[in-house]
Length: 75
Image 1 (spheres, one colour):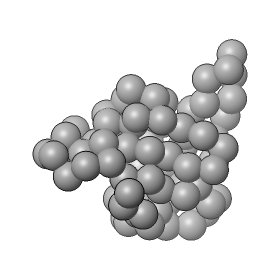
Image 2 (cartoon, rainbow, N blue to C red; image 1 turned 180 degrees about the horizontal axis):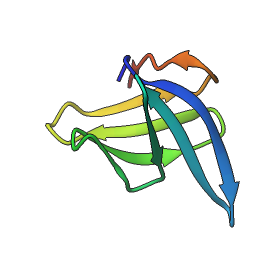
Image 3 (cartoon, rainbow, N blue to C red; image 1 turned 30 degrees about the vertical axis):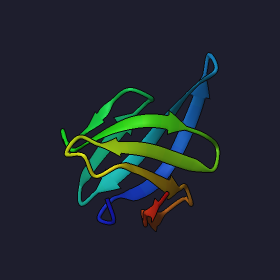
Image 4 (tube, one colour; image 1 turned 90 degrees about the vertical axis):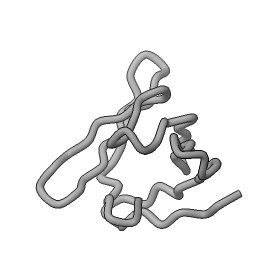
């Protein structure tokens, strides 16, 4: 996930959408979505994106700081 950059998020109808960038691609994800078939978005808050690895790597909490690469903090 460190190769992704958090670009921002949008709240509409009490649902948060997160915008992630990777090279020239933009990913738009919400709770329940998959990211590159490797991760599932478990939760999105104003401060963090929580994902679960689909390969059994456990839960990862990613602080959301705009225009910064995503660094993971394992819980």
